[in-house]
Amino acid sequence: MRMLFAAIIISVMLLVSSATSLEARTGKTTAVILNQPPKFAYIGDQLKVTGQLIETNTREGIANAEIKVIDNKPSGQEILVSTKTRKYGFFTSTWKMSLEDPRDKTVHLIVKYDGSENYIGSISREHTITVRLLPLEINFLYLKSSYKQGETPEIIFEVTSRGKLVKHDII
Image 1 (cartoon, rainbow, N blue to C red):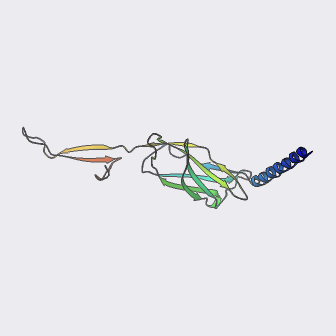
Image 2: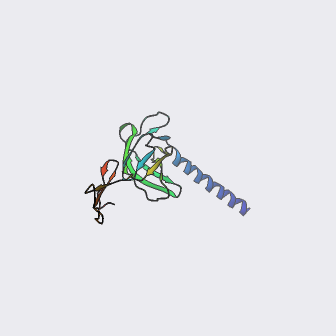
């Protein structure tokens, strides 16, 4: 009899905790729409992503909601930047592209909305961005066009990346 009473008490407790968690999940469903980001970016580039947070039934945007732009790495999620949605649920986020782990040259980009008391959270579809190292071009400039035997040539070099001169202290 005591075992039956204990089983009933435990069942009621589990039922109440399940009902409470269901109540917490009630609210309007949402969707994060992430516009196609670039397929690749160079280290140091300012990367910009845009999208919209909507309520799925009405397709209306949700304004003033906090969203997170995340690198969904296999080793764990890293928040790149957080921002709030504007009027009609639109958002724009910008951050500087970096490469933390040189072995993993990709960013597995998602945008996440955690939800609120009125809305259930959602996550965008994942997009992959390939991170590229800056291409460097080295130009050697000889101070003279011809040298005598035994004369040491003087050479100046300049390094450019994507058409811009790279400062020597950076190299």
